[in-house]
Amino acid sequence: MKTRRLIPFLAIAALSISCSGNSQNSDKGGDKSEAKSEMKKEAKDAKKEFKEQKQKVVKDLEALKSDANNQLSKLDEKIADASDDAKDKMKMQKTKIENEIEELDAKIKEVKASGETEFTKMKNETEEFLKKTKMDLKDAWNEMTEEEK
Image 1 (cartoon, rainbow, N blue to C red):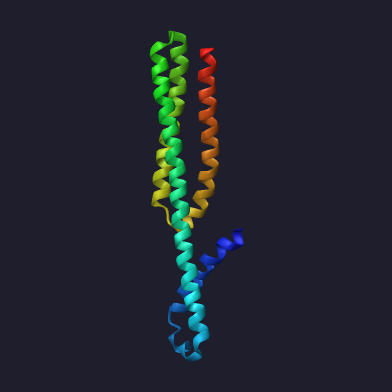
Image 2: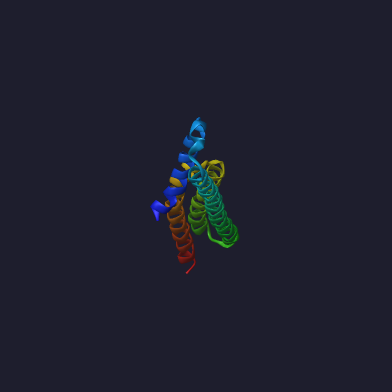
């Protein structure tokens, strides 16, 4: 899978190298132009795949942020009806969720601003972050709902 993803990026690099000053080799015929057009196609496909992956990551982050905001709204409603001891615990949970939302906002901005080379690294980091955040939010929600029982 990694090899498949590396090939288009290598094609981009090879294309940029072949386009930089090798015009004296143009008399070698159709083989070179076919290879060049194939590399251009692969580069175009790689850019398209990059954009699609980037949009998917942003969509996942925004969905998680939306879930966190929904949990925050529900928590606010429960805080209003809770006892003083429970309110303090719920406010701590609320703070955790708000911090997660801030981290999600920062990740969304970072992903949107990233280029292709940064994106691959960031994508892996973001996937780990999503897993961690989902677990943190799930734990916070479970703690809150257990306190009600």
